[in-house]
Amino acid sequence: MANDAGRLVKLSETLAEEKKARDTVILDIGRVSLIADYFLITEGANKLQVQAIADNIMENLKAAGYPLLHKEGYQEGLWVLLDYGSVVIHIFQPEERRFYNLERLWGHAPRLSNFSTGT
Image (cartoon, rainbow, N blue to C red):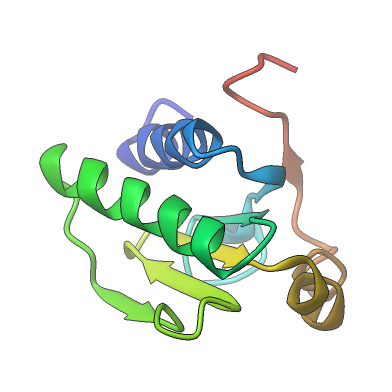
Protein backbone atom coordinates (compact mmCIF):
# COMPACT_ATOMS: atom_id res chain seq x y z
CA MET A 1 0.00 0.00 0.00
CA ALA A 2 2.89 2.32 -0.58
CA ASN A 3 1.14 3.81 -3.62
CA ASP A 4 -0.80 7.03 -4.00
CA ALA A 5 -4.17 5.26 -3.83
CA GLY A 6 -3.13 3.80 -0.48
CA ARG A 7 -2.25 7.22 0.88
CA LEU A 8 -5.51 8.63 -0.49
CA VAL A 9 -7.70 5.97 1.13
CA LYS A 10 -5.85 6.29 4.45
CA LEU A 11 -6.27 10.07 4.46
CA SER A 12 -9.94 9.70 3.49
CA GLU A 13 -10.52 7.34 6.40
CA THR A 14 -8.90 9.77 8.82
CA LEU A 15 -10.97 12.67 7.48
CA ALA A 16 -14.19 10.66 7.79
CA GLU A 17 -13.37 9.72 11.36
CA GLU A 18 -12.71 13.38 12.23
CA LYS A 19 -16.44 13.88 11.70
CA LYS A 20 -17.34 10.80 13.75
CA ALA A 21 -18.07 8.49 10.82
CA ARG A 22 -19.05 5.01 12.00
CA ASP A 23 -18.31 1.45 10.92
CA THR A 24 -15.77 2.36 8.26
CA VAL A 25 -14.78 -0.46 5.92
CA ILE A 26 -12.10 -0.36 3.24
CA LEU A 27 -12.35 -2.88 0.42
CA ASP A 28 -9.37 -3.63 -1.83
CA ILE A 29 -11.68 -3.53 -4.84
CA GLY A 30 -8.76 -3.38 -7.28
CA ARG A 31 -8.12 -7.07 -6.72
CA VAL A 32 -11.52 -8.01 -8.13
CA SER A 33 -12.56 -5.12 -10.41
CA LEU A 34 -11.26 -2.34 -12.61
CA ILE A 35 -13.66 0.21 -11.05
CA ALA A 36 -11.11 1.54 -8.55
CA ASP A 37 -8.32 0.42 -6.26
CA TYR A 38 -10.29 0.93 -3.06
CA PHE A 39 -13.82 1.48 -1.81
CA LEU A 40 -14.17 3.30 1.48
CA ILE A 41 -17.63 2.65 2.96
CA THR A 42 -18.78 4.51 6.05
CA GLU A 43 -21.86 6.05 7.60
CA GLY A 44 -23.22 9.04 9.41
CA ALA A 45 -26.28 9.08 11.65
CA ASN A 46 -28.31 11.55 9.57
CA LYS A 47 -28.25 13.86 6.54
CA LEU A 48 -26.27 16.61 8.31
CA GLN A 49 -23.58 14.23 9.49
CA VAL A 50 -23.32 12.51 6.11
CA GLN A 51 -22.87 15.92 4.46
CA ALA A 52 -20.37 17.03 7.13
CA ILE A 53 -18.28 13.90 6.52
CA ALA A 54 -18.41 14.51 2.76
CA ASP A 55 -17.53 18.21 3.17
CA ASN A 56 -14.53 17.42 5.38
CA ILE A 57 -13.24 14.84 2.91
CA MET A 58 -13.79 17.05 -0.16
CA GLU A 59 -12.23 20.17 1.37
CA ASN A 60 -9.16 18.45 2.74
CA LEU A 61 -8.50 16.20 -0.24
CA LYS A 62 -8.75 19.22 -2.53
CA ALA A 63 -6.21 21.03 -0.33
CA ALA A 64 -3.97 17.95 -0.52
CA GLY A 65 -4.12 18.02 -4.33
CA TYR A 66 -6.56 15.20 -4.97
CA PRO A 67 -9.18 16.23 -7.57
CA LEU A 68 -12.77 15.11 -7.11
CA LEU A 69 -13.87 13.48 -10.37
CA HIS A 70 -17.55 12.97 -9.57
CA LYS A 71 -20.01 13.50 -6.74
CA GLU A 72 -23.51 12.05 -6.35
CA GLY A 73 -26.24 12.16 -3.75
CA TYR A 74 -24.96 15.11 -1.73
CA GLN A 75 -28.19 17.13 -1.67
CA GLU A 76 -30.29 14.19 -0.49
CA GLY A 77 -27.66 13.11 2.03
CA LEU A 78 -28.80 9.49 2.08
CA TRP A 79 -25.86 8.03 0.14
CA VAL A 80 -23.06 10.32 -0.96
CA LEU A 81 -20.61 8.95 -3.50
CA LEU A 82 -17.27 10.72 -3.96
CA ASP A 83 -15.20 9.44 -6.87
CA TYR A 84 -11.47 10.14 -6.75
CA GLY A 85 -10.62 7.64 -9.48
CA SER A 86 -8.48 5.16 -7.59
CA VAL A 87 -10.63 5.57 -4.46
CA VAL A 88 -14.43 5.69 -4.39
CA ILE A 89 -15.95 6.85 -1.11
CA HIS A 90 -19.48 5.83 -0.08
CA ILE A 91 -21.04 7.69 2.86
CA PHE A 92 -24.41 6.30 3.91
CA GLN A 93 -27.13 6.86 6.41
CA PRO A 94 -27.62 3.54 8.28
CA GLU A 95 -30.86 2.46 6.59
CA GLU A 96 -29.47 3.02 3.08
CA ARG A 97 -26.27 1.22 3.98
CA ARG A 98 -28.21 -1.83 5.13
CA PHE A 99 -30.41 -1.73 2.03
CA TYR A 100 -27.59 -1.50 -0.54
CA ASN A 101 -25.18 -3.63 1.53
CA LEU A 102 -22.09 -2.95 -0.59
CA GLU A 103 -19.99 -5.02 1.79
CA ARG A 104 -22.00 -8.10 0.79
CA LEU A 105 -22.22 -7.13 -2.88
CA TRP A 106 -18.43 -6.75 -3.03
CA GLY A 107 -17.81 -9.45 -0.40
CA HIS A 108 -15.23 -11.15 -2.61
CA ALA A 109 -12.95 -8.08 -2.31
CA PRO A 110 -10.44 -8.30 0.54
CA ARG A 111 -11.15 -6.05 3.52
CA LEU A 112 -8.28 -3.97 4.79
CA SER A 113 -7.58 -3.26 8.42
CA ASN A 114 -8.54 0.08 9.88
CA PHE A 115 -5.51 2.24 9.11
CA SER A 116 -6.06 5.08 11.52
CA THR A 117 -6.48 2.85 14.57
CA GLY A 118 -3.79 0.43 13.43
CA THR A 119 -5.97 -2.66 13.71
